[in-house]
Image (cartoon, rainbow, N blue to C red; front, side, top):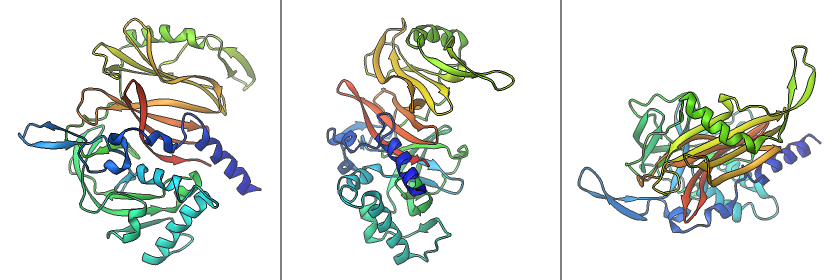
Length: 348
């Protein structure tokens, strides 16, 4: 019965519109295909007068306190279509990784993390990244060069039906990531650093709150008084910690644009969220995530990054439910937002 409950909750996460790992999100043109890893999709001249490839392949990375771990979700999406598509599903995927641990390490049910400093032939089924591959890492503190040095299988991540298998890199000199900081990695040396702060001017925040409040006028939330007594009330305001606002170019329009994300908690297990691109007058230009009121799932703007130097900011969101979630990397392409990568999914 316990396993059934776990499966149901995980299924709710991976099938939700806002946080699912959909293979079809990776069916766009060759620029966002997993086959484009380390291959040129277009070129540009850099300051060193050399022409280098600029790739639309991107990976999400994270500092785990000891090393940089890099998730190749393109390969995971391939496995979703093949290895996980028939009887056995995710269990078959995780069983193959446990078999790898038993073959190349000393397996112990009490041990969750297994490190490898050599590439094994079977690893090509789980990542396109090879030891020695050189990438760039966009962090809150700057952009750094990194090199793939090994791999890790983390069996703890099975609970969220996640990737489990990651490439690893050493922390670059000068980088000082926050605890469990999520980063962006690509083959492009003209990436910008991640911007997680956004607009902090209170007048601007208040201005966009006034633009967004009409969308929330019928939303009801649960409130608690000093004695913990529960009551239902209509949303009266958007608090600062419920709004993320960024100024920049998000659709290539050439005009001033604002990325605005609102996330409200209706009650302990339900949320209201939206992510819009607006102009300076509050007109909604695009919806990255339409208004979802009193929903089991949510989508929240986390940060932005121009990972390929085209002057258009990409958007990283955290998407999930009250006991889990993960990250999605969105790029505006051909008139709509495409999810190029996602990762670090977890859940109960």
